[in-house]
Image (cartoon, rainbow, N blue to C red; front, side):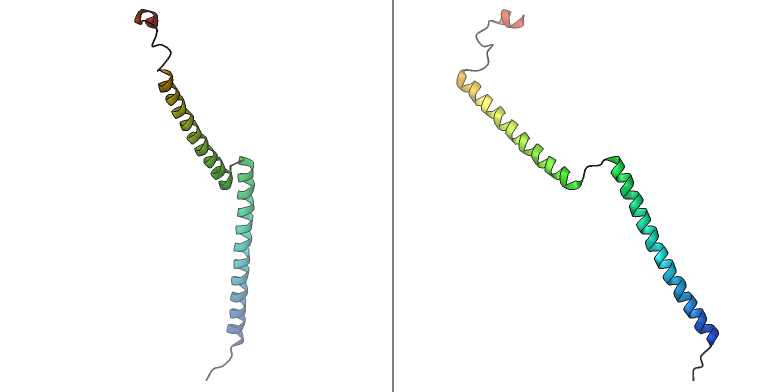
Length: 95
């Protein structure tokens, strides 16, 4: 047999309300922290990840193009007969 105790009932309501208030305060603190962090990051002028990935891909493409051009230059040198100092004597090449 259970009896209703109004003091315990009120205490349960009070603790439930306090937990709800604590959770709301925690959510508010998280929102304030996130807003402050976003403001600091915006002031730091950091690069976003997607912009970084785009630049990284462009740099990789440019490096590949540079290597391609270097190999073309080396092939042209071989076809042309080497470097331009081959016909110069050793005394002239040394200075």
